[in-house]
Image 1 (cartoon, rainbow, N blue to C red):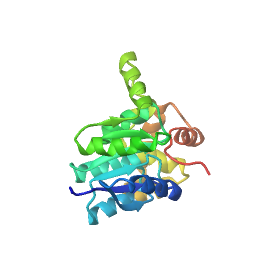
Image 2: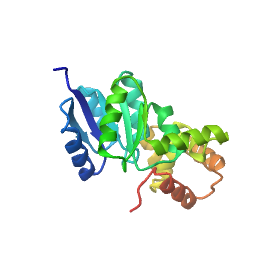
Image 3: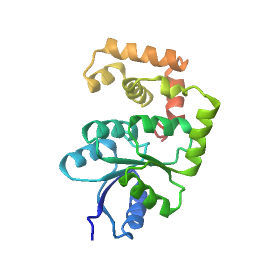
Image 4: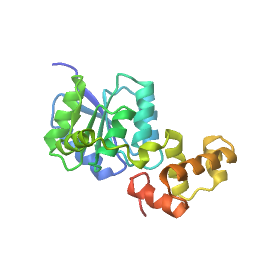
Length: 215
């Protein structure tokens, strides 16, 4: 029998992870080797243990799915990264692909689609849920320009999330080990690109885009 595919689950909801584990462990060729609740824990796990595929949500506290995609792709180029999310729109999917995702599935997919997605990316193919495929195709056909979130750099997205969570300029500067002036420059750039000129509007935008979770 060939070696089983080692899967790491990254999702901040315990019940979701339990359900995914149950689905995957019904297949003899798949083995769940770990569960984590955020991107930072996923990167730490991957630094210490071997995995073939990471099944990850995009919206997680702390280091989110996009940052996990970026960090994992840079450090482990051969690792397969399969997004499993509630976001069905083309903007989220396109950004995930740019950050390194090999596939993009929706949480309302049939259980068999997750297994098929893992097997597809392990075979070197990409895999997208049908609604996501349609959304991406429509984006290409219509020539739609990137959405507002796509205008931001990776660091600007990180700063936006902390601003939306209510951190002060000083606290953000300390977190990234940069100057307060640099934080202010990032914030001004974010407001200009998004055409949103208050913290309240930035927070509303971050909630809408799934960058932070509502209370």
